[in-house]
Image 1 (tube, one colour):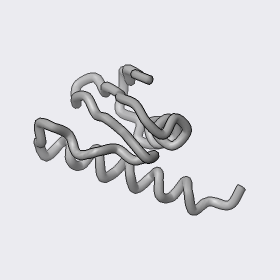
Image 2 (cartoon, one colour; image 1 turned 60 degrees about the vertical axis):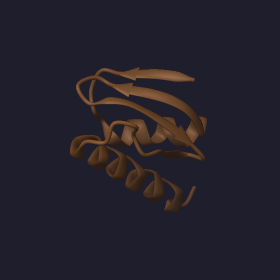
Image 3 (cartoon, helix red, strand yellow; image 1 turned 45 degrees about the vertical axis):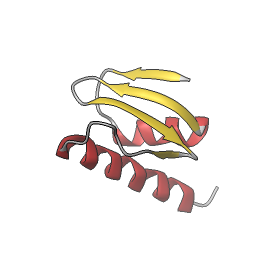
Image 4 (cartoon, one colour; image 1 turned 90 degrees about the vertical axis):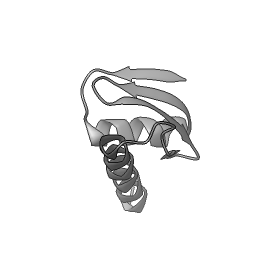
Amino acid sequence: MFRNFKAYRPLQIARFVKTLFKGQLHIEGIGSFEFDGGRLLMPHNENKRMLSVMSEVNLHIRQLSAMPA
């Protein structure tokens, strides 16, 4: 599944990644990412912005997983 996000909203992106588990996404102004196992993977063209986005979204995914239902 591929999704294009027009704005960077980490919690919305985290929910999308956690729900679909595997696929690709693009955040306008930042770049494209792949995700597998419910986590964003390291981007192919590493830059500091993409790495910080990856770690922030993965942090939100961990927090969502820790929340009780």
